[in-house]
Amino acid sequence: MTVLAQPHLDAPLSTAMREGSQAEHTAAEGSSFMAELLGGRVNEAGYTAYLLRLRQVYAALEATARATASDPAVAAVFDPGLERLAAIDADLDHWAPAGPRTVDSPAASAYAERVTNATTWAPLFVAHHYTRYLGDLSGGQAIGRILDRTFELGGAGVAFYAFPAIPKPKPYKDAYRARLDGLNLDADEKQRVVAEVKAAFGLNQALFAELSVDLDRYRR
Ligand code: HEM
Image 1 (tube, rainbow, N blue to C red):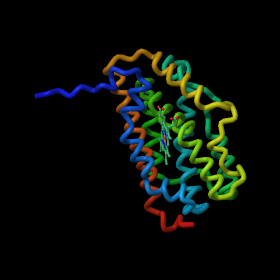
Image 2 (cartoon, rainbow, N blue to C red):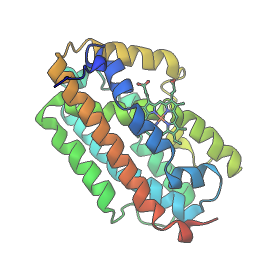
Image 3 (spheres, rainbow, N blue to C red):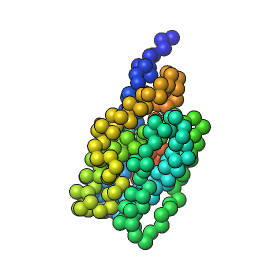
C-alpha cells in the first residue's frame, strides 16, 4: 500500500493551516447564503439572523481568549484589538434596534461549544481564532465593502468589518502567521490544528446552511 505524503505538514504551521483548509474555504465562499447576501438579496431580518449567530460565536471566542490569554499558544495570537463583540452589538443596534440579542441557533450553539471545548489543548483554540479573525481581516474586508455599497449604508451597520486598531491588515496578518509558525509544533500537532481549522470551516458552513433554510423569508 502506498502511503500518500501530506506535504503541508512539513510546511510551517500557518502554511499548513491555509493550504490544508483550501477546499473548505472554497466551499464556504460558495454557500448560498453568502452568495445571496453579497448579491444584495438578503433583507434586514436575514442579516440580523446572521449577526446574532456571529454574536454567539464571538462571545465564546472572546471570553475563551481572555480566560486563557496566559497560555503561550493563546498569548501568541491574543489581541483585544481584534475583538468583534462590541462591533456586532453596534451593528445590531443599526439592523434591529429593538430586537433581541440572542438567538436559538443549533449551529451557533454547536460552534460556540466547540470553541469553548478547544481549551483542552490551547493550539486547538488557536485554530478557531485563526479561522475567524484572519478570515475577517482577509475576505471579510471585501465583504464589508460590498455590503456597504449594495445596501448603500454609508458605513453604518458594518462595524463588524472595521478594525480601527489594525489599520493595515496585510502586515498584521504576516506577523500573526509568523507567531503561529513560532509555536514550533511537531507534525502530529500540526495535523491536529489543521483538522480543527477544517472543523471550524465546517461549523461556519453549518451556520450558513441554517440561514439558507430561511432564505425565502430573508429575500429582499
Ligand atoms: C464569500 C465568502 C468569502 C470570500 C469572498 C473570502 C475571500 C478570501 C480571500 C480573498 C482571502 C485571501 C486574502 C489574502 O490573501 O490576504 C481569504 C482568506 C481567508 N479566509 Fe476567506 N473568504 C470568504 C469566506 C470565508 C469564511 C466563511 C471563512 C471562515 C470563517 C474564511 C476564512 C478565511 C481565512 C482563515 C483566511 C486566511 C487564509 C490565510 O492567509 O491563512 N473565509 N478569504
